[in-house]
Length: 218
Image (cartoon, rainbow, N blue to C red; front, side, top):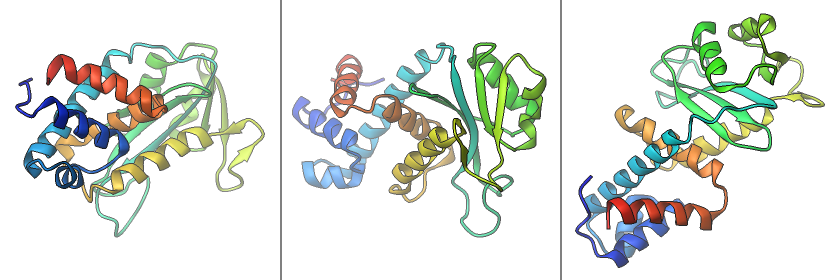
């Protein structure tokens, strides 16, 4: 990765605006840098975050885990949710009281979803899902499976997936401001959302991104 020709002062300002959720176009106008330069710098920050999050993904989840899929992008008209045309399916696992892990997937078959759960979740953990049929395989697995039927209710005491659904809502709210993301860059944006969720403290985000940029971009 090439080091940036921007001054350290302007790089720090761009990092601050990135963490604050300011778009690159708006940040470029505020700081006084070329719009394309700001967009490219943001792109490099997302690359660094993607690498940072990927290195940490060997961690195995245990305890109470919520899993769910969601769909991003595509056209708003027509079918929404599962099976919606041109949307990108993403699978998510959330450890209650802990971190979230997301992965772009090609399909939502039981083979695909269960394969990721087996890799990421410790046996005998409690796995909460909705009533989607692809999760039926969990009933005869090494996991304790509880499902909530959203046609009837959204929570029944501890039986719910409100945590991972809250993450989806946060991620979509953040990504909506970009008015469309190229599919070839979407993996960077969704991992940015994972990073923000797993490091909720703004000062912590600044510290991590600053150290990553100092090593690669300054």
